[in-house]
Image 1 (cartoon, rainbow, N blue to C red):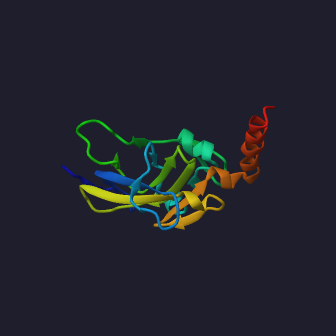
Image 2: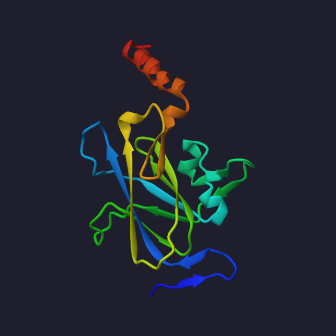
Image 3: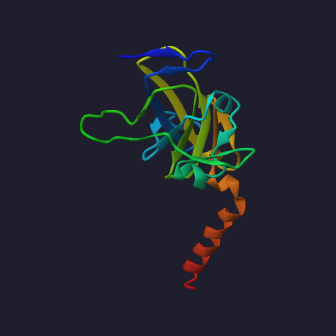
Length: 180
């Protein structure tokens, strides 16, 4: 079922596996660290061995991440996702994990929480045939002010990209409450 094919003259491997991303949501410090992040999406990008390991490709904003786009950090070149996974709430599925079949390594992974407007990215590499690989990512909503790193993921809130946008809804809400 699984094939390991070494390509002549390079260190890249073609390996089939089921990548299982476990998207979690923590709404406050000390809250349940394993609450599912509903509606999360994960994108996988095959970008080449050196580019993946050097993290030359990544989303440049929440809008890019949500659209399934990454950019080369020096050239600005744009790429769309190679594989995408969403949560499947069908009758035969009993978990809230996201399954993505991978056929080669390394890849750049991008996880998106559209409800709380967070995104995360990381490189991911494996070299041995394995049926299933579990990779957790936790969106910590209370840490929206600045990016943080956890389990090799860099996690960023859309609000931390442009803090001035955070004030706009409050002003609009005031106007509504005052009947303007």
